[in-house]
Length: 113
Length: 113
Image (cartoon, rainbow over all chains, first blue to last red; front, side, top):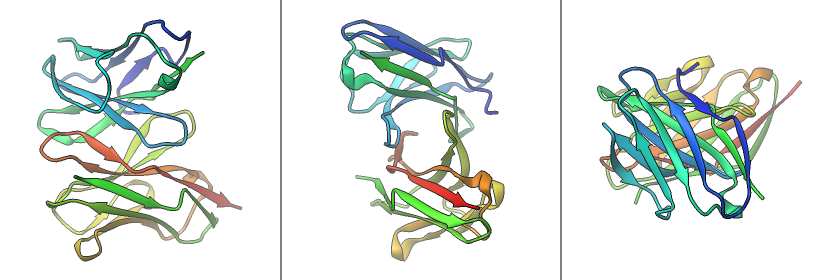
């Protein structure tokens, strides 16, 4: 139990639609990262937020965007969904004083048809 | 650029046998290295981490890993496999000065009774 929760657990969307995934971290975890894990692969870094500002971005297009809120929750938004966006989306949070230990949530399984 | 390579997408061992999961890294500077475990339909759980302290790192569930700079390796071992160890294991390296994790492609551990 990492104290990081994600919702929804599963989601089915149609190509071209938009989706919002949510993550809730533990109190004090002011850094949150989002990863995409395609089937049979390791997680790929999407972006990271620190104190509500984007702090780094991986090789993902601008239609992937995020928000981080003062209550240690965050969102991942994906516009104009494509079939290849089907994946498990993981969020991970960490304490400022222990940034090397990231706590992962259980993930949201997104299927795009 | 930092990266990790996990040799063997699948490893099968008998219950009670030694577990050895291989990870090699490429990094121009001393890296921070991690092993995560992922059980079916779950997120990632941190097993252990190397952060430039002792080269032999002990983690949870009886796992340990040894950092060998000369071999650029960080292999994961466990003396005696248990059925509950069956899962996907990911090696990861922290990228540069950010907290971004770069994951290997994973190794699925199968434990035979």
